[in-house]
Length: 244
Image (cartoon, rainbow, N blue to C red; front, top):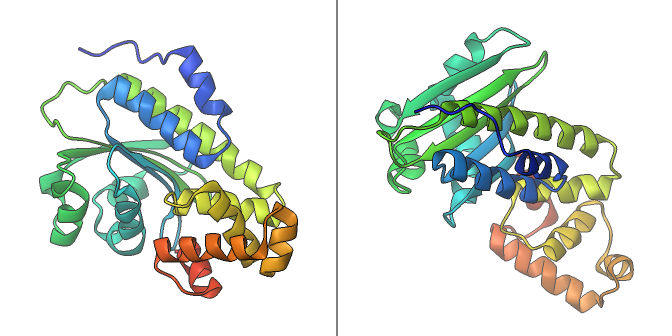
């Protein structure tokens, strides 16, 4: 049975107040799980090139792997692309895609079969120069998903992500990079993001240490840990991983 579609006002306010992408993602997942049994979500900005990850959160540990693989390899094979491109500018779109509708075997295995998701539900909005898409994954295809509440959450998510993007453009370069790292590399700790962001602006370990109140040796330790987590060995590779 479908409900009214209304979201708990306190939960909606908390979601829109979140300005950190990781916190926004977690609050959105909590609300979607409560409303419709959603177990993973992925939000991205789509344009002419590869999608840019804006938010991802999951009850599973390997969500970052799936988000990265989708952005780099699988987005061309996503049936949701047709629904997105068919929508006129200045309008929203919705599609429900069961796992067996995914033809590319590698995509289906990594993003559906391995985590045992039976369906993804995509909501999006077409702007003049880009699209914002929010995708919810769940494991119970026969479950009575409350689409009204899920649609209301998607509207909040698109609004919140638009606000976060607008906020990012007003941030100084280091803060913008930190925010981007929080979106693309959720595995990093806040301190690792701080060190990596400053590394990408060209600061030396001594300069980073001075800004953060750490020793240069500690800065190098954080950098090494971050690089190991991400499978990179130098700043240029880190930048490439952010740009997707």
